[in-house]
Image (cartoon, rainbow, N blue to C red; front, side, top):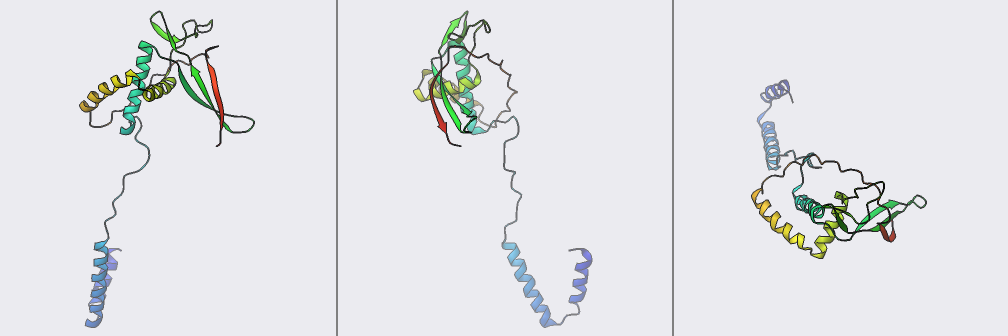
Length: 195
């Protein structure tokens, strides 16, 4: 409503008799009471994903555990573990889930690599990568591996020191694309997952 409309209403009120003025007054008061009882609509914060580069608080500990496992595995080696891989069957269109058993590590010249991964193509062997460390960390946590207790003690003291706002994530360093490991991967089960 603009100022000229309000001025027109005010001038017309001067010409109205007292009975109609009481009706207008009651209507205005009831409308004012109704509007005052309604809560003021505040703009809600935008829902959706977190800003880019910020780790949600609920994912900070699992992410730190995977990073800890990757570092520990590269320094001290790892045991045999399983990795789930999903593929889409070209003929039926169904998702097929494979469970791949990854071999344990062997120490070659001070570097832990997959056992049997030294080939003509990859003469230095292949190390564990982040994706595989995720599966290893899950297995280690479920089996109560000693490294999880060590992580818990270190993470607990670190989180108390920096228990305020989430830290921005640094850009991940791209890992080298691993060459396929020949004769070291063993497929245990295949099962079809309905989509």
